[in-house]
Amino acid sequence: MSATLIIIVGALVALIGLITFNFYRMKNAKPVTDSQKIVVLGKKNFQPVVRRGITLVDFWAPWCNPCKVVAPILNDIAESEEDITIGKVNVDQQQFLARKFNVRNIPTLIMFQNGVEVKRFVGVKTRKFLLKQVDELRA
Image 1 (tube, one colour):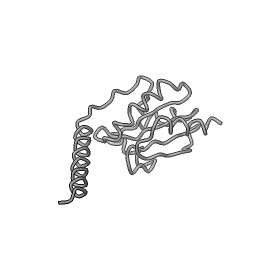
Image 2 (cartoon, helix red, strand yellow):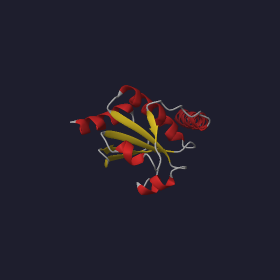
Image 3 (cartoon, helix red, strand yellow):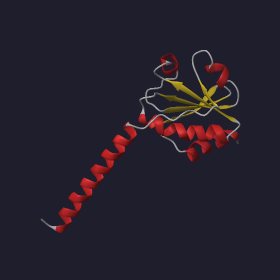
Image 4 (cartoon, one colour):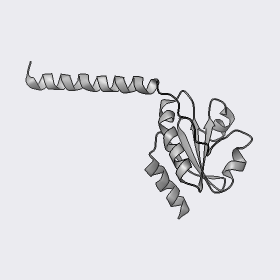
């Protein structure tokens, strides 16, 4: 065997090992406790919460690994940004809201301004990205 082939096979084995390790690490990740400033939304309180100002709503599920990645980011934003309301909708428990807002993938983050949907993001987004989107609405 040539040295190049050995290096390529070794790199592939290392990559597969890294992917497997991260998969099992995420699969067994504990859910993050929500900040006290995050509002759990349901059918009854959804409209009153999103009616005023900027509200970022996270459509999530407890079994969703990417949702577990987004949770600490939203906690951080809720604690540091006083003029943004962060809400969470558990799509397993609030299927009506998930259907109403046509949520097909999770995590889905929907940004409302004065009760109107203005932006939608699917997947894991960074704190910096989300705050940039909020700043565009503030301007």
